[in-house]
Length: 108
Length: 115
Image 1 (tube, chains in turn orange, purple):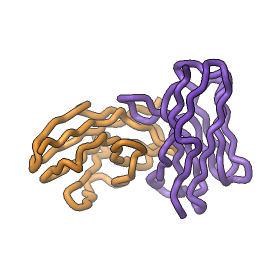
Image 2 (spheres, rainbow over the protein chains, first blue to last red):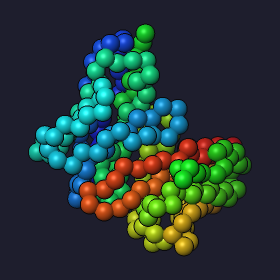
Image 3 (tube, rainbow over the protein chains, first blue to last red):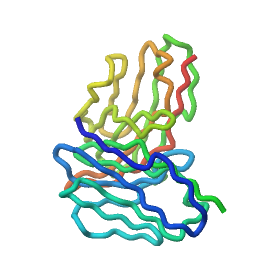
């Protein structure tokens, strides 16, 4: 059965800090790795990663995939209170299998 | 296009009753997915469709759950003889298909409470 594990489960930081969120996966017929941000309601799509070693960047967020070691990281630099959310990682192999998320709290 | 729509937003039902939820995906998306999410957990896969064909259904899903996508447009998810353990947020998502896959666009969800 496909499995996605995220760490840490939760993280509390202060504004301006940099954070790294981790995602490891064991997936049959792996196609891509996706990151989502979930605030109060439904998850919203952040990144899709398909190739090892190629960083995807959007503003202060960046992500990279290691297909040999089967993990991905999501970095957020200069965190803001608006970054507070649950960050979900998902594998894509036809359907997506989600991890349980990392709850990030950014304090002013 | 207004995105993925789900109806109703909230549903409270008594144990043993049947409930049906509706999802309208983004019109050009040919894949539609149903997930269930409880507090502190990531979305759990239930089933998905490509056009009108149901391609996969979770082995964890009991026979009380059924989903349809007639004509490859909107989808319905029915839960028969609801149990308290069915209380959760039911999320629908849609995407394009092909290649390495695409990110999902989620609806706002239907929150089910079984009392």
